[in-house]
Image (cartoon, rainbow, N blue to C red; front, top):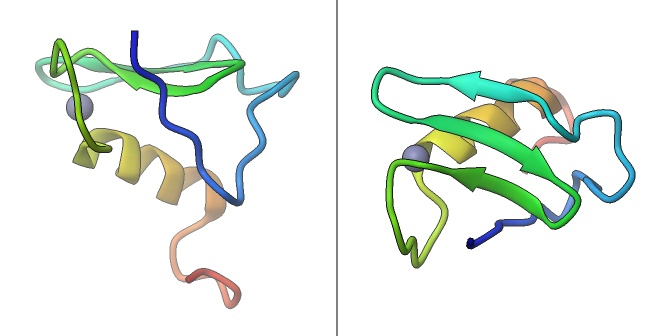
Length: 66
Ligand SMILES: [Zn+2]
């Protein structure tokens, strides 16, 4: 399984582990290693599902969001 990390979100040992965000055709889940989405079998890069979950965690429109 492929995991995607985010530079601002530390998932290792995080309270986010095990959380699931369901989307219409897939789901994003958080693991120690990072985010995983079920929309692609072998994702090469982060899909929009993961990106939107990350934005939700960070808070869209935050002052320090880059
Ligand atoms: Zn996805």
